[in-house]
Length: 219
Image 1 (tube, rainbow, N blue to C red):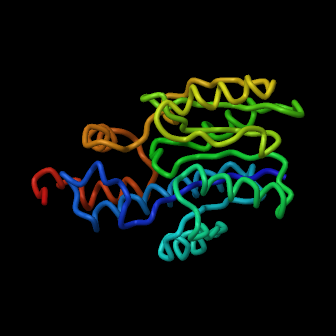
Image 2: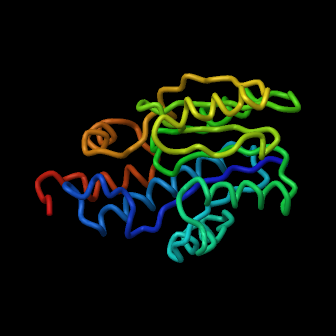
């Protein structure tokens, strides 16, 4: 059984590094548009038994459910992305009986179904394997795990190196994929500018069409 897990911040805190160019409503709308697209892409692959989004935001949970995916409520006692992902990782492995897990961020608007399938294909049939796609700033923009608790979560600065080191320390084979679309995420204003010139998913493209004039209306 294979699942994909997508972490999502509370919308009021979404994309804070874009606060100089987008107001809070625009950032929330962009975050939800990108989430819509990555869920749609995962569904398009036909490869997942479960598409799960973990968040402590009720609007994100409602939106996830509307898209036909499974919202996971982040316990209020948890602090930080890695604690949230570890909770979801364990839940999917132990309660849902997932044996293969792909972790994706919500903000990879260029991702296509073929890119997701490439990560799944790279996992192959080894009993224990980790597949990694680095972001352009050495973060982790795709992490395939078999078994789903193969390694601990190390998201954050230089997480790609940390995840590789964790797999090597555990004696688990690790493969890295170079994928230009998956490596692109939206954090800074320059990423936003680049995204607007690229081929994005339909929800993000719709946001661009309606909000693409943001530069002339900065708060």
